[in-house]
Length: 305
Image 1 (cartoon, rainbow, N blue to C red):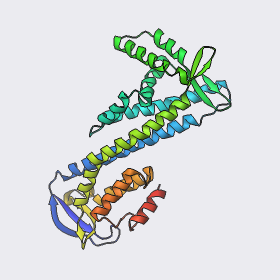
Image 2 (tube, rainbow, N blue to C red):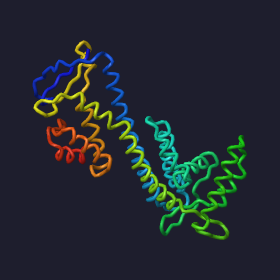
Image 3 (tube, rainbow, N blue to C red):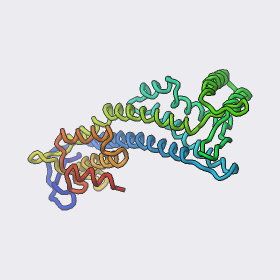
Image 4 (cartoon, rainbow, N blue to C red):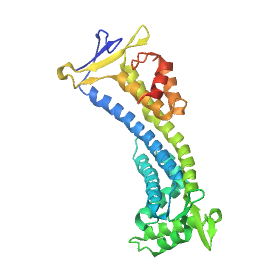
């Protein structure tokens, strides 16, 4: 059996028993809640990766034409980050497809970069045009159309998708740079537009996942922690027949998650505001990571490694 014990200082305090016990399936449920938190952390990290890869592409400058591999490396990093995000959210539980499919079906920049990624990979559509004075990089719309039309597709739906993508990219000619009857689409501008749209997706996706999965998991963790005189204690939930492996610490799991959210998103983000409001409503005011109140905990989280 798992038993709930507590102290007022995990480093120095005396440990007391609450008399509360859970069956041997407790650790499975506890670990499942932590897995939900980890999945959310990775979801947040994927947005950070997309932003980082996009910034890398936007800041690229090359010395000469022999260094186009540097541009295309950053282009691949960016499109693969966005496409990897698309695949991850489509398999996320609770399902996020209602949000991401809404943006995908808008046929705007998120959809464009996901579809374009496949043609970069399979038809070797790469950046070969560079404007030295401002560092902008381009794809040739006519060349893309030619490559897609000449490719030998094995399935009819692939051919149809390529035709639709060709028609779509040709609508961008008015916003492209025209040189000798060729139209060059700025991939730095496309990247900026993708990042702007991804920021909108991020807010909706994270808030939905928080309400459906993270908030219930955090409330569940808080309910495990005993209170003495209205103050949350530091809890150990242990199977004494299987020490030290069978020890679960809900305070640590809770505080570590909040710390990492503040570090990654910033305490002024909508998710962190929801987290901190939840803790305030529940009365969780003493943080054992640093033995401090909420203001110092936020300050420490900002500068944590």
